[in-house]
Amino acid sequence: MHSAFGALVIDHYENPRNVGSLDKEQKNVGTGLVGAPACGDVMKLQIMVDDNGKIVDAKFKTFGCGSAIASSSLATEWVKGKSLDQAGTIKNAHIAKELSLPPVKLHCSSKY
Amino acid sequence: MVQKCLTSSLNGVGLTLDRSQGLSIRASSIWMVQRRLCSTSSRCWNCNAVLSNDQFQKSPFFCFSCHGIQPVDENISHFQRMECKTNYDLDVSRLQKFFRELQSKLHPDRFSQKSEREQSFSAGQSSAVNKAYRTLLRPLSRGLYMLELAGYPVEEGDSDVDPSFLMEIMELNEKLSELNDLDEIKKIGDVNAEKLKGLMKELSIEFESKNYEKAREVLMRLKYYANIDDKVRDKLGTSTV
Image 1 (cartoon, helix red, strand yellow):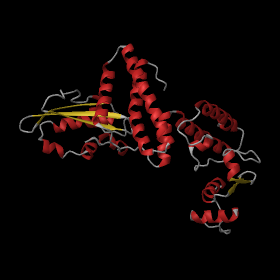
Image 2 (cartoon, chains in turn brown, cyan):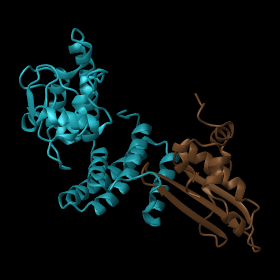
Image 3 (cartoon, one colour):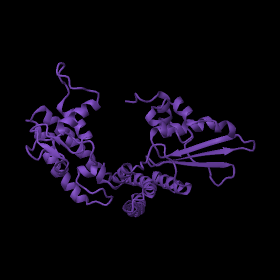
Image 4 (cartoon, chains in turn red, orange):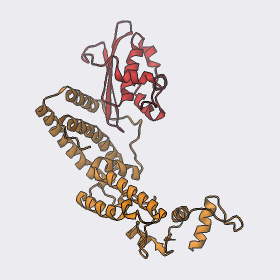
């Protein structure tokens, strides 16, 4: 049934990491919102940055499909502990590759 | 004329008429190629009657002469198939009535005693009519289809919309996912339904004035509210799917 998807994507979908919200009013919290008009889904990704520019926490919420959930979950895992510059180098293609998303689901990872 | 067209059609698809080798291409494929290339006329596969465009537009399903079912014309729009004007505002009850009438004539069940070719034409016509009906019935899919026809499709990977709008949608989604009180959910649903109504009015105006860029923006917002509407229905157990 899940033949088109890899085990990792299913794991991130079934047990998404870092779901939730950070206080967007806080000065060291950055909030990003992206929509996908073609499917009407919206997702939010937040990071908390310390004084040295290191990402100490990351949370996401998405009301999208399973691939979008898995992509968000993996992205939050990856950015935690990285500097802003390092995190900026993450591309959706990396995430899609790591999760072995089928081509049709590439757009679900393309928010990054 | 038809003969000339047919020959040029065959050349067009890399085939030549060669008596020694015989010609093994199915009549239905010839028919389709021919219809594509010759805008003036084509012939009924069954009785060979010339189907002029005028006659064909009156009934793209059956031959006017022998009443035999014809293969699907892929080149007509959903609107043409359902005999509607290409307008965003359409008479839904007429569409529903026309759909039922068509399906009662085209459904494969009616062709179970007919030839294999007619069965396959009926299956094709019936499914094309289904698709046209489903696309035109709901305002959202009808609008998206009209944008496609006009060359302004909403595509995967499009991202736009202003952040404050996305925040509103995000918060609506968050609120809805946490709510269990049916009355509260219904309230959100009612407010959302009003928003949908307003956007559909806007959409109708933009399509009417052929302002497709603007129609596209409105439709994108509409899609987000339509998703909320689906979620409200899911929660209230009134899902129409």
